[in-house]
Structure formats: C-alpha cells, structure tokens
Length: 489
Image 1: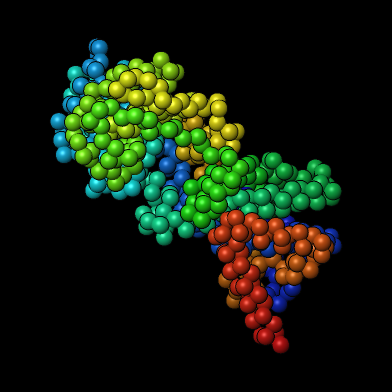
Image 2: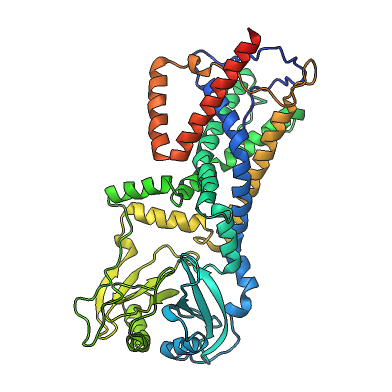
C-alpha cells in the first residue's frame, strides 16, 4: 500500500492549526510509529514510485507491442524448407561484412525470421546488431539493435532504460533503487495500518467494518480512505514482489544480493565453454569469447570464425538431440579453443531454460546444464525475473503487471488526496495536512525498540539507499521538531 493512511477516520479539516493531534492507539502500540513512517515515506517517495509505475506498466506491455511494431522484421510470409543455418548466417554476413558474428537465434516457428547477431564496438553495453533473415530463401529483411539476453528491440529497450535509469546512466539508477527499496516498506506498513483500522472498526460495529471491499456508504475523505486502503491491500503482495525482484537488478542492494547468493551457493550454474584441446591451427587469442554483450573484438583469424559458422548446423542438431530445443540462442565462438553454447531463451509458459556446450569440430557435448539441477533459489530468481519482465505467462502476465501499475497509481493519487483533504481550513495558513503525531518511539516497549533498531540497521546495511534515506528522514524530522519547540518557546 502506498502513501499515508493519514491518521484516523475523523475528518480534521476544520481543526485550527494550534490544536494538538491526539492518538487513541493503546499503550505500547506500534501504530503511531508505522503511521508516521508510512506518512513521510509515502509523501517523499511517491514521486519516484509514479515514474516507476508508469514506465514499468509500459515495459510490461512492450514484448507484445514490439511484435506489432517490428512485424516486418520478425515475421515473413515465405513457406517451404528452411535453408541450412550456415547459409542463413552467411547471408547476414554479406549485409554486414565489417562485423563479426556473435550468435544466432534460429526461427523457432514457421513464419518467423532468423536473428543473426553481430558484435559492434560502436554500440553500448549489452547491445548487439541483429540482421533478420528469411529462413526459407536466406534473404535479409532488415537490421536492428537488440539489447540484453531478452533480445529487446529498440522500442522496448528505450522503455526499459527509462524504467531502469531515466536515460541518465548509472546516476539515474538511484531513482529506481530508491523506489524499489521503499516500496515494500510502504506496502507492508499500509497493510498493518489498514488491518488495525479494520479490527478497531469491527470491535465498534461489525456491520461497517471493511477489509477487502469498499465501504460504499462512506462519503468524502472516508470514501477516499476506503479506496486507498482496499486497493492497497489487494495489490500489496504484488508490490512486495516487484520490490524484491527489482532490487536484484539494483546497483547497491543488488551487489549484496549477489554476494549472499554466492555465499549460499544459490548462483545460476554456468557452462564450461573452454575446450581441453583445440584443433590443429587453432587460436586461443580470444580466450573464452562467447559472443554475449558488447565490446567484443573480431576474431584474429577470420578463417576460424568462418569454419565455426559452417559447423552451426551440426551444433544445433547435437543440441536438439541433447534436449535443448524450441527457441534457442547459439553462440558462435571466435576462436578454436571455445565451445559453442546453445541455450533455451525465455518464452511464455516455459519454466526451464536448459543449455549445452558443444565442440563444433567433433560434435561432442562438453558440458550440459539442466534447469532441474539448479539450486531452488536460482530457479526462483529466474522465474521472478521473467515474471517481473512480463515474459513468464505471456500476455496474461503483461496485463496483470499493467493493471498492477494502474492500481498503484490510483493508490498514490488517493493518498495525496487524503493529505490534501486533511489540511486545516480555518485559523491557519497551512496549505497541507499536518503529519501524524510526534513521539511515536516513546509509545514502544523498550525491548521492541531495541529489536526494531537492530532490524533497521541490518536492513539498512543490506539495502543501503533505504538506510541512508531513512537516516535523512529522521534528521529532518528531528530538525523540524527542534524548530517547532524553539518557536513555541
């Protein structure tokens, strides 16, 4: 749930500014503290969440939209037997003879194009140039820049980078990490406040208590609060999921996640691509060049790369016999000491991605990675990333993510509306609503406070932007309180 619950059910818009807010919460209650944290975090972080929700909703729909936008590149009308893969790749090489082949994604269904990727040193990180080839007549239908392991085309890449860092590079990633860091805190805090409000209302009058449904008899600010709370509690699990998976991509918290996974042996297994013995005349100058990402240099011996292209059909046949089938990406090594790798790409309703390493010269399988053998945490990470990207369940997945983004925006707007409607209208020039009552820490049992501080320190260390921004909130709050006391004195 996002943005403050903003105190209790009673409207206080007509209260004078000199009035002191009272809190009827029982002694030793966590509610005042969580309410104040929910208020400040919601007010200050919500603008970041708005950007993340809008860009994330667009990105969720992008995989389906790009199928329409780039249809002329992705689909062809020709029918018949497909040309050998080596012939298709060589057709792409004729289009870009100045670049080195890095990988190929064969057409997996009739009517699809084959995607031949080239290393281009003029492109950015994780970008490659793709030439799209008609698999039947081995004719190029165009070329585009593709990004990352998902093979995102330019439109989806633009939206992805907007969502990730606002097209500002590394400095811009702070925005998305800050939003992901606070999203779960705001959501869980809102759930706590809404459940506490429901329990209090039920104790007073069970007929008016609402937890999962809108109170249609309410009016004004109470109706806004009902919308804010009900929609928030419905989407809370989704918000926590987006926060957790988003942090795995973040700059600072993401590094801690990687270190934790490594320490617990939860990392994704990697194929061993190095061949024990290279064929005669082979060169190991490129040292394990696998064709992924940007910055690769052309092979020092073009003859080796050309020979490797000629071995693609054999490699793909071996991979298919090894159970690596469907939509796959095959890397084309630039030297004789590196094996080909064939990996199943993420597709809707596909829950496993096997991969295989093959010696192109002999057709021998040198390594095999079965998704079923991965650690559970690695599987969950893979599924979580695909779900976050809108790929795991196809269009259904994308529509749910888009609906979640719209719901989050609605909760944020309702939260700000609550804040606005709570402002005093008489006896003050205060333009905004008063924050919840101060002194929340004094309401907590000392033992709870100690445990809470320890937990905050631990979470703040693991999620650094959350910890730093929380310290900033506390310092500002203390400064505002000190200023208020000086004015009152």
